[in-house]
Length: 80
Image (tube, rainbow, N blue to C red; front, top):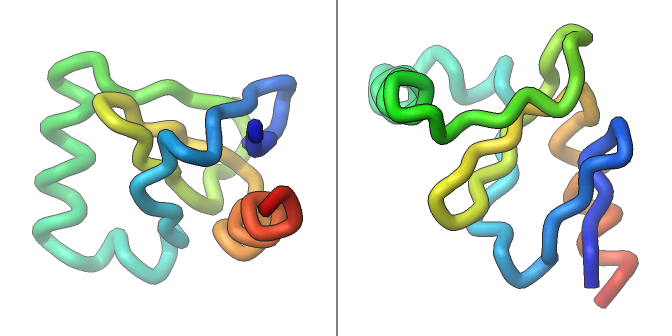
C-alpha cells in the first residue's frame, strides 16, 4: 500500500521507517545532524515548497512535507 505525503508524492508503507514532527524534534542536536547529513548527501526530497510540518524517513531518502506527522500516520494506519 502507498501513503500520500502530499503534492502527488506517495511512498510504500513498508518503506517508512519513521514519521517525525519537525517542530518537536528539530531542537535535538542528533536530528539536526542527521538532517544535515542527508542534505549534504542529496538524500532529502522536498514534497512541497510550503512551510514543512514533518519529515518521513524511508530507507535512504528523507521526505520533507507540509503534511502533519499525525496526518501521515493516520493515512498509513487507515491503509492497514
